[in-house]
Length: 277
Ligand code: IPD
Ligand code: CA
Ligand code: CA
Image 1: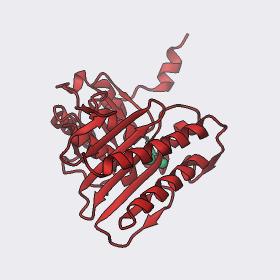
Image 2 (image 1 turned 120 degrees about the vertical axis):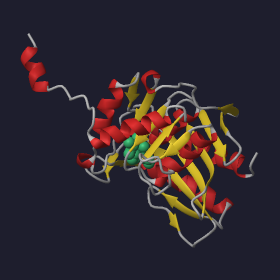
Image 3 (image 1 turned 90 degrees about the vertical axis):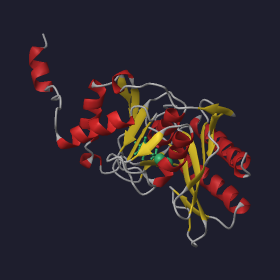
């Protein structure tokens, strides 16, 4: 086991406990954008994680979603999402996590730790060492076709009027067992890693959302790319992750959707209203 994992897991667990303390109290919401929320819990969790990481590995750079930055050109950089799923958290919906990743200067993902304090689930991975959930090895699912798959996706809170994902959501829903929209991209990727989802996609994500989850999915045997099949990179923003077995089928389906070919039309709500008794 890596020298990093036990210590990073301990930090993620501590931050998760802090989130649960806040979760039990009334949450005061502030806005970063029109529906882009932030709470005291996001900030307190980031402060805790950043203090721990900086004191243990002062030589590494760091990027935290809530503003923490060290940028010295170091060989390694931490990406910290202190609370992924803030909107869920703020509304009392218990689907959120802490996500911490270590990335090499050349963007190689090295360590990914993701802790879900609501289920006490610790996902951990290190490059070349596989992925674990609460200490036990995890693997992606064996589902071989899109039509038998369950998938996840997400919708951003930033520039949401520019996001085309509702069309993908509609088409892939009709071609699979269904698409879930749980509200935590990091957990969505972890759910691909442990086989609860057969695939996940989203547009407009940031490195702190994806770094730990992408490594988990890859180390659990999955495939993570962009929508054109090119390798996922931290600055890709878009991500398409799967168990590998359905990846080509997903790429073909997304290519068709982006080309506007073979699309089922969205039923009209106006027509539906006319047919109601
Ligand atoms: C958000 C969540 C959500 C995704 C958004 C992210 P946050 O992160 O991961 O599932 O759809 O795009 O911004 O703001 O809760 O850390
Ligand atoms: Ca996030
Ligand atoms: Ca966040």
